[in-house]
Image (cartoon, rainbow, N blue to C red; front, top):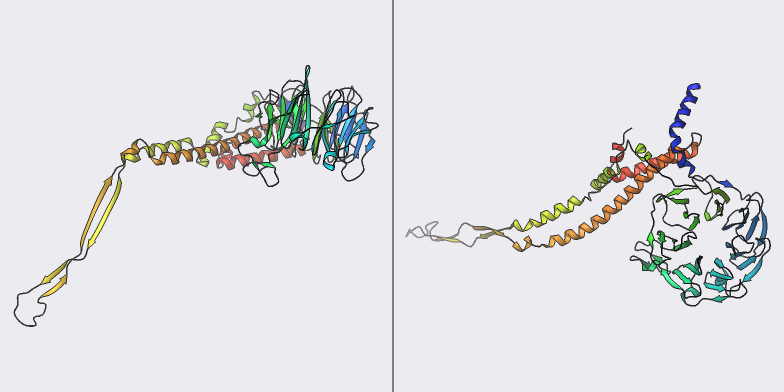
Amino acid sequence: MKRIILFLTCLLFIISPCCNLAAQEAEWEEIGGDIFDVRCILAIGEKSQDILVGNNGNIFCSFDLGKSWTRSFSLRGNNKNINQIVPAFPGKQTVYAATDQGVYASINAGIKWKKVFSGLSKEENMCTSLAVKGKTIILGTNKGLYISKDAGRSWGKETGVLGRSRILNIEVYPAGKKTYYYAATINGVFRKQDDGAWEKIYSQSDKADAVNDEQGNITDSQGYYFGIRYIKCDQSREGVLYLSTGKGIYKSVDGGDHWESIAEYGLLERDVKYLCLAAPGRLFAVTDSGIFMFNNSRWLEQTGSLSTGIINTLAISEQGTLFIGASKGIFKSVVPGGVISYGNKIGDYSANEPKINLVQQAAIAYAEVSPEKIKKWRKQAAKKAFFPVVSVGLERDSSDLWHWESGSTAIGQSGDDLLRKGKDNIDWDVRLSWNLGEIIWNDDQAAIDVRSKLMVELRDDILDQVNKLYFERLRVKMELAGLSLEDVRKRNEKELKLQELTASLDALTGGYFSHSTKA
C-alpha cells in the first residue's frame, strides 16, 4: 500500500508542471434549477449578483447569483421567445427585453415590465436585438431596423435595405465624442456614425465563390451556407470587431473597413453561432460542439464533458463570471486567467514522435503531390523536341503477272503458253521527323501548368489537415497529462480523442505516423 501511495505521489509531482493547462478549462456549476431552454442572460449590479434570464415566454430574476429565482414576466400565445435582455446604462436599473411580441422595459432591474414597442406586422413584432446608448435605442426585427431617440417613446423605421432585412444583432461602440453603431443582417454588416447614414462594410455575397440558392440564401460553390451569425465590438480596444459566420470568424482592427479570418486551430466547427468578450479582449465562441476560448493564437474548449444540451448564449459579468444559457439550464463558471504558454514542454510531449516536417513529407509522398513531380515533368517536356517522331510505312503490290512459253510446237502441250500470277512485292520505309520549335515551347507545358495548379491546391489542403491534426493531438496529450488521476471519465474522452487524431494522421501518411512513433 505504501508503495502505491509513493508511486502516485511521484506521478503527481512529475505531471504537476502541466496542471496549469487543465486549470484553463473552466469548472462549471449548474444554477438554473428548473429553468430550461434559456435563450438570453444578463448579469447586472455592482457585484453582478443580479441575473436576468429569458426562456420560452418567461423572464426570471435572481438577486443572489442564482441561488434562488423569481419569475417576473410572462408572454402568452405561440410566438413568445425572449431573444435578448440589455441594460440601458451600465450599473443602472433600467433594462430592455427584445421578444417575439415587441420590446418591454423595466426600471427596477426586471421586477416589473412595460411594453414600449409593437410592430405593425408579425415579422416586425419579432424583435431580435437591441443596442442602447443614452436615450437612443437601435432595435432589430425580423423585418427591418427601428430607431428611438427618446428612450422608446417614439420609433422610426429605417429605409432601404435595413428597412426590410432581418436583423441578427446590433452592437454600439462609444469612441470619445463619437458613437458607432453596427448591424449584422442576413444581407451583410452595416455601420453608421452618430446620426450619419448606414453603409455596408461586409457582405458574404462579395466572396469569390458565393452564389444564391433558390431560397435566396448565400452559399459557396459546394452549397454550404455562408450565413452571417453575430458581430461583437471589443469595448476595450477602439476599432476592433469580431464577426462570426458559417465559414469562420473574421476580425477587423479598423472599425470594419477591412476583415481577415482568425486562426481556427482547436475550434471543432467553423460555424460559430455566438461571440462574447471578456476584458481584456478575451474572445469566446459558441458552437454546436461547445464553448471555446481564444488564447495564444488557438482555441481551447471550455465545456469539456459538461452536459448542457444546445447552448444558446453566453454572458460574462464585469467581475469575470461566465454564464451559459442552454436547453438544459443555466451554468456558471469563472473566466480562466492568464495566457497559456507551452514553452519547452512541447519538446517533451513530441520527443518520441516524428517532427511535423517529417509528417508533412510523408503525407506529400503518400498522396504523390510532391513539387519534384512537376519539375520532372517540365524537364521531360523540354527534351521532347530532341526526340524524333518515328513513322513506319508498309506497301504490298500483288499485280505482277508472269507469261510462261516453253517453245514447243506440239498441239495440246501441257503447261505451254500460260499467264501466271507472280510473287507479291512488299515495300517498306522508316521516316524520322523533328519539330525543333518545341525546344522553345510546346503544348505540354500548358497542360503541366494546369496540373501544377491543381496539385498545389491539393497539397495545401493536405498540409493544412496534417498541421491541424498534429498540433491538436499534441494539445490533447498535454491536457491529458494535466488531468487528475480521479477524473476517469474525462481521461477516457481525451484518450479516445488521441486515438482518433492518430488514426487520421495515419490515414494521411499511409501509416507513417504510428510506424515512426516510439513506444
